[in-house]
Length: 318
Image (cartoon, rainbow, N blue to C red; front, side, top):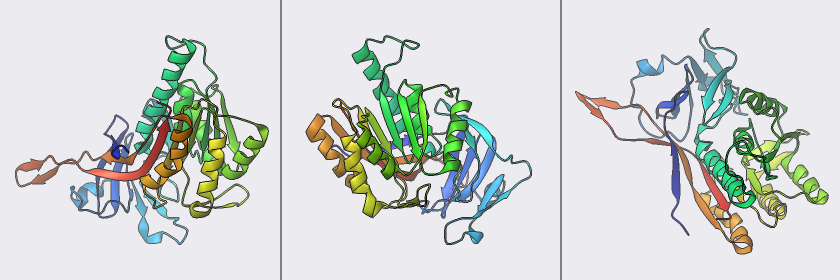
């Protein structure tokens, strides 16, 4: 087994992790600065409280309820939603009652990886030499697809995508992101459904996919209030998804944000793909590098800190 990797992103023009610590993170999305909770930030902040207080919006942890809903304290200059350019895609950012804002920036390395796999397949197996040539029929299924980052990245690379999510709000958000990114007319099917129910119907229909993506939560509900529990439902879903793969699949990606499992556990579920198709499995953590520098006296400390943001396991045919 290969060593575990840490896939890291740094600051870009429209996104930056400025500082983190003491259970919080300070980020910039475009020109808007947000302060919100992050339990992984189990260390001291670098910047003084005065810098954190300059945030345009603060998620108020004092009013978080049992279902993890909370409230944002917003300055009057903060719009209802705003656009950012990130990882060659455009997204609408909007603070929500669950502290999320519509994008998980740490996923960018996975998007790049899928783009690379899809483009290499098109070039090597279809004789396509450059951008703008006729697209090949590469089918990708994205489950628990949220606001569409992975779906848009795959469509941008030339794949046909089936985007499935149990939230109507998230699905509408994803379609808005597609239009914002200039991908409105790309072959993306937007499906509001329970992931398990949709996969079972796809099996009955005989559908096959070259790539599968899933980001299963620890707990959740489908559009008809179907209950998802990862400890009860994950193994069967992965098994059924494997049966949806073509005879020559390209990739299978599993992300984990808050389920509490090790990337090794996800890896073990992908080993049957190695046995059947060859290829290899990579595992590791996703992280964001801070940009803040700590000043001690007249000296600026340059140590790099990473904020862990989740785990991944991914299989590819190569």
